Every structure is written in structure tokens, then in C-alpha cells.
Length: 238
Image (cartoon, rainbow, N blue to C red):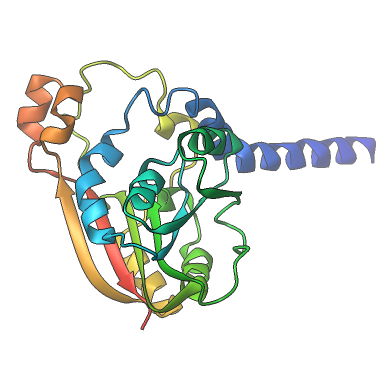
């Protein structure tokens, strides 16, 4: 019995460690997140803002806001923004940058602490890749959006080809090695949209472009320029 209890204990500990793996990765990354840019968020930035089209007095939830990169843009546009993230360390940095904005510490895998039909728009940049089961989170996005509201989210392109992708400087922090990432296919997203009730409004495929040229070697940039790196979805709650 002692041996069995010991094995059970170790098994539970291993599960907890796996659950906390991604959170621990972001806690570590928070220290340098704004110093060492993420190629995906850089390459998508202008398109993400355009597709979100934040407007004065709109109520926007920036889900998985990190250190507040997009939150700040929406706030500047006059929107009423709430930033949400599961990493307290990221939120502390965001609060320092935009003290006027309300931030909530919450995990996307859990039910959101907001009433139904609450937001005009929800944004979620480069985070759904950490979600294994898509249906629950999209059902929650749908629940808290107003009728006619929009969900704008970005992910690494489902058909991305990393061959030839070489950074000019080797990053000290490599998210893919220290967090759980799930490579969902287009069909997985489409099924989740249909199951939750969303209608697709716009799909924007974003290629490697000059915004990350300085991060790549010359040879790599010449090879990758024009190759799709990110996809941004804009969905509507009918």
C-alpha cells in the first residue's frame, strides 16, 4: 500500500507540473517579454489592429493580454478595455504601463468571470495554441460577447513551414521548448466555430514581411519573405 500511495503521489505531482508548465514559462518570459520581441506578434501587429478596429467607448476584452501590447493600443483608441491573463507577472508589467485599465488574473481554460452578452469585441493574440480543447473556450467567448459582437484572434499559421527559419541572434527564451503548444489544423478551428455558434467574418493570412527582417538572417529573410507565418480570424456572434 505504501508503494502504491507513493506512486500515486508521484503521478499527481507529475500532472500538476505539466499543468503549470506553460504558466511557469510565461512567468519566466515576463522578465524579458518587452525587450526580446516575438516574431509572430511583430509580423501580425498592424493587421491585428486593423481587423480589431477599436473604437471610442467600445467595451473590449483583451484575453491573454500579456504585458498589454494590444491593450494599450485599444485604450489609446478610446475603447473601454479589460485586460485578462493567467500570468500575474505579465499583468504587473501591463498595470505599470496602463494604470487606467482594469486587469483580471484568469485562465482561459476556466469559465470567464463576466456576465453573458457583455463585450462588443474580444481579442486574443497568439494564445489559443496553448489550449488543447477548443470548444470550451470558444463557447465562453460566444457567451460573453454581445449579439453582433466580434472575436478577433491570431495563431501561428496551421500550415507554417519552419524550414529555413533562422534568427539573427539565438533567443535565450524559446517558448516552444518550455511550454505546451497544440498544433491545431484549420478544420479544428472551423469545427469549434460551428459548435459554438460563431460565423466567420474575415480570415487574414499574414506572411513574413519587413517587420521582422531585422530578426532574421539575410539568407533566411530572402527565403521566407512572403511565406505565411500567422493567421488572424475575425468571427461574429450572429
